[in-house]
Length: 422
Image (cartoon, rainbow, N blue to C red; front, side):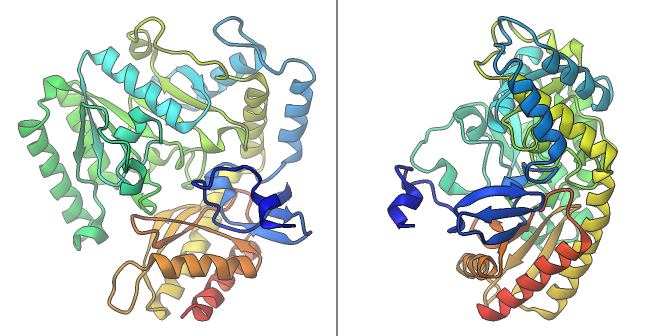
């Protein structure tokens, strides 16, 4: 197959991390058009939580596609959307019981942003350094995981204020010291940049994704919750990547014993079908303004049917528990490799979302080495992706169905790739 045929008319600005042309997917594997079988440790950036083409999800989508593909939800309602809204309300924390559906994580983050401003009557949103909330202008204005995302499209939307996130490795301190520093700085921001009476919400990833899988930690998250309550602000948990069992708990924020006022979810929600949601209590949702929520494809019938089947698979197959167990095994293997491999500076994350940061001999972030490692792993039939400000972090994001022997195979391939690229 020629390079031109591989790329077709796709924009040259969209860069693929591999040279694979995927023909089909089966569980934890992608099969290329050449018949080669790749262990997929990307899950389509955390999307195929139940694996590629889980039979139950496929059957639900096929059955729905033969009945109703698109029932536009500002015109009609349909059973898959109504059932999914009810099921999501049952698994949401606290009093959260109302759902607004959209297509992608960025659209859901925009919806949460609008609702927070309208529900509180306050203009400012406080977000955190290193966060990623999407690529559309509102969510991009809250994003600071990499300067390249914002380059060439400034100025950003006003009313977003950035506060430090407790990335202990970046500051060179212990976790508790870093969390306490960040909370003090947050108080300083509330006193100098965005007074509480003008601050609508804290918008935070419980585990930062694109920054390298950095858990916010209990002290910091509980500090946010306390300040939100004290100042009449909302706490919005962006669980687009960390939710749906990925962290070893159904919602990542539950690791830290907090209850957010809003939850944003997407990615693993429908096992590959485009679907996202903003969830809030009725008392907050009803304070949104008329016509502030909508969209042509949000709550698509086939996607909702796939999401319902995905929830059943997660529960029936114990995938949250599997994420916790296999995540612990993955972490133990990566920690052991880090102890013997100087190119790995650090391992961080929870459950089946971990990052391994690669550095050069001077201890500087080494994005070039990480790119070569990914290519070497592809040659060993394992697909991985990178993240981090310099692309220096190799991330571990397998489907929640992953087995212990597949974890071992991927880590062994990683060790070989490190040696091959030294």
